[in-house]
Length: 153
Image 1 (cartoon, rainbow, N blue to C red):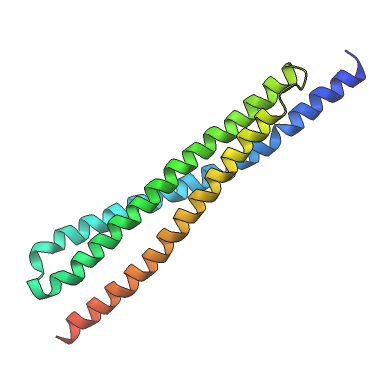
Image 2 (cartoon, rainbow, N blue to C red):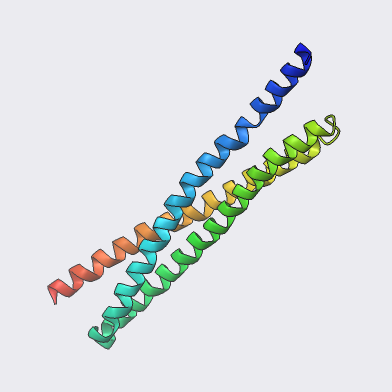
């Protein structure tokens, strides 16, 4: 093995590190997003269980909360799908780098394209998670208002 071929192998292995770092970050976001989804579903179950105990004039507020939590769950679900696509993009990037190296570096657009797909999916997921967080804060504020209103009645 010549020193140049050893350097080529190290360069290939080094280039495989970037997708691995993106995979780790995406995995962390996936864990967080799945936890958020579980919390939203739990909260929806609580609100649905409250439905029979709430009198019709106050049901409007409860209906609004349920609708908002359903929207939150859709945002988190979209984020999870995009995060899984990002994982696929980053795994694909690693494979494309290996295929590109094996083919004598004749496919430079393939790994770059896969990486761009992964990063765009990560960006989209971040937007959805940001939307979900803003809805979570709004829902919390409304729940506090409703609770204070009930206590004063």
